[in-house]
Length: 51
Image (spheres, rainbow, N blue to C red):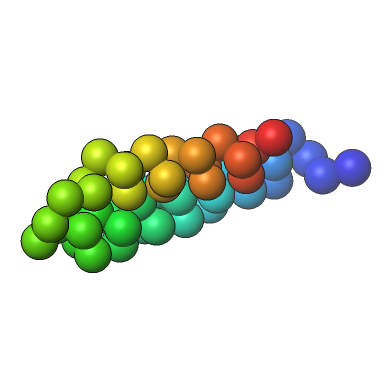
């Protein structure tokens, strides 16, 4: 079983990935509608990675 520190590091890296994906989605959709939608998609991906 991974140690607690390793588990925390893994969670932090998943959070960082989710934030990067969310930022990428926001920049793609900045010129039109869909800004809120891309943020929601980024959050959904982040929560899925924890479940």
